[in-house]
Length: 257
Image 1 (cartoon, one colour):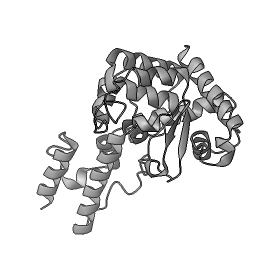
Image 2 (cartoon, one colour):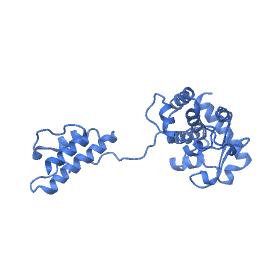
Image 3 (cartoon, rainbow, N blue to C red):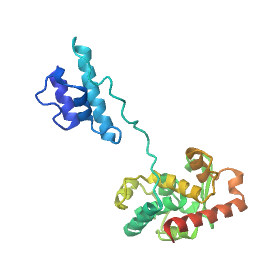
Image 4 (cartoon, rainbow, N blue to C red):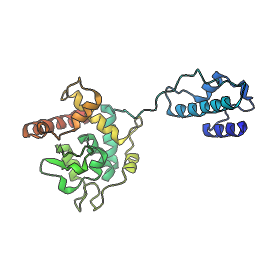
């Protein structure tokens, strides 16, 4: 039984873990070597779990075997991404969107400029575009509240670049643009790995740099405050003009345009 579990473990690790070794010869150092650099690698986290589970399983079934992994520290937490693209990365991503063009390029550009959620742009309909703003109804937003996005000249340019042939903006058809994963793969700047949602976080961070938000707020509250315009204080004409000016400033300063 131990031999079969050992084979499963080595297959999962995709390497010859301890070939020809007896169970009792496996030391703490051997387990650490198999897991790799757990502190910096998600793959290391997974390998560590498998290796430790294996020796713990053996300990539970063998009278005179103690797991060598007992004193090994827990690996880095597998936490959600918190990537923020810097100005240079955003510029490279914009240039890659320019090169790709089409719905994929337009999607990434709109996410950079507006801080909107992915589905808010992939499902953007022509009738949601007004003279000076994009008005998203509550049923289209995560919090169920209406969301208003001022249209800056850069956003306008992206909107005008798309076909005006039917209901939805990005592909000019009666079906919303659904290939967001493919869009992300096609817009491929030479930067560290990123996701479409990282653009939203980067947008909020950029507004913070423009001193529009109170810097004492936590990052989560900052993101919510930067992107929410549901309350009356964010939808009054005066504040909307200020927000449009800040969005314009953000696009120009970040993309140097």
